[in-house]
Image 1: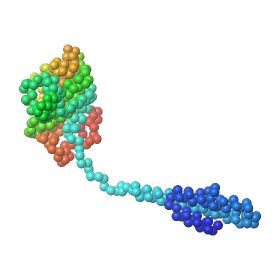
Image 2 (image 1 turned 90 degrees about the vertical axis):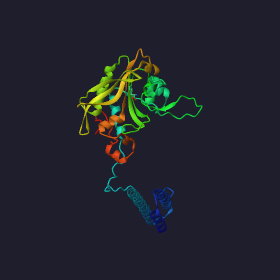
Image 3 (image 1 turned 180 degrees about the horizontal axis):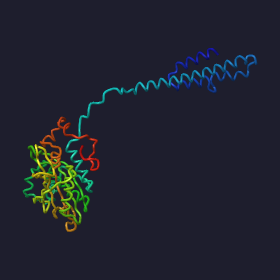
Length: 357
Ligand code: PHE
């Protein structure tokens, strides 16, 4: 019995995990374990022998049972200690250095513009930045020898000699998305399309890539008055002022008739711009009633549907709102500039929550 005790207590002490402990338990005090078999032999003993062997066997069984339980608890404690060691976190460490990147002012302005027009029921549409010259020009009533093509400083995609697929261009404006949206959705339609556009031009106020937002609303009863209201609401919301004065200046675009460029009343005092007061006017967009030929090119009957379209420079209104003097800085990817002019990426602009903070 002493041998049994020494053997099993030794094994229990050496057991490295619960599975091993269980094997030891079965071998010692399980139904067919060594100690249990010995207990069965009690029946064959004389009463005297039984009187000493019985209590001794019971004591051995109890001792092994508690040794098993103690070792099991010890193993669990060790496992917990190990886990705590691994998952330890020094909460007294300083936090990470402040954020590196911010939301670019063009992204911010696009989000703000989208939030405002969404509130007025405009959905966001998209189109490719590389488009055919049909979408970029012909469908918009700009035939091949129209002077507007030359004015736009278009980037044409290279074509190998003998390749007679229709020419592709980097879109010079977001207006081709008018046609694509009409084709895809039909009428009535109310969309805006923010996105990048390209023209071969470079100075303080021009970059070869810049951003526009197109607007298009077609229905059976839309007039210039609706255009004016929508733009007034937009400008008030975007510049976060209570009142604005818009000026519609007669203009010409091949794809709208009549056409108007829109200025807003403003003042420049000590280099800062104030919207809604003063004696200056600031041009912010081109607009008009969509030309019947353009509506027809989009696959819609211009005798039934009419409406307005506008195109606004996002970079321009972002510069105006956030006091950014040089357009070219938008495209420099200078982190110091971005830290100064950028926005916290989690502050999604909404009309009720505030556009910019
Ligand atoms: N596409 C014009 C431009 O880029 C803007 C515009 C859009 C004007 C829609 C009128 C209607 O200058």
